[in-house]
Length: 155
Image (cartoon, rainbow, N blue to C red; front, top):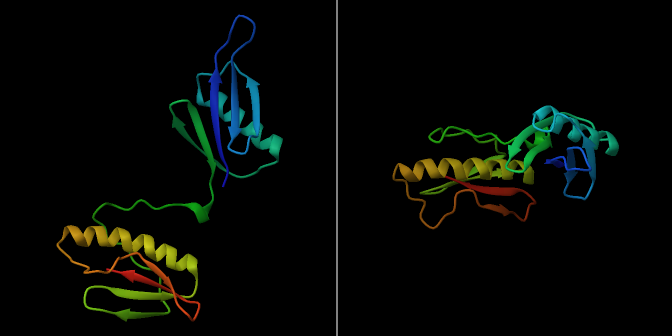
């Protein structure tokens, strides 16, 4: 996923103000703009870089000290921020295995296991505050089984 940063360079005696847009791969463009103090000018610079590189999609803007940052909105990269005390549901596993202090969910794909791992870490932090003890087990840990499936420790 591409991230674009923008930065304002104020006018000098010989140059008007400009805004640069760049990414971590070294792609860069600079535009002259009277809108250097508004988001519109930063948006124009980010869009100019996208057009130069023939990138399409929806950009999401955020602010940083030096200017703005833009990332492409991609449903597969969305990160849910749950309420601090809200337990989250796990994706449906192929099967489960139970223990005394934890359980294990088994998944066919590593991606499902990673999603479950993030949920397990979140849920474990809530249960820990409620006094639960997981023994020597680590909720959120992923183990690849000989079968090629993935086992995730859940609280």
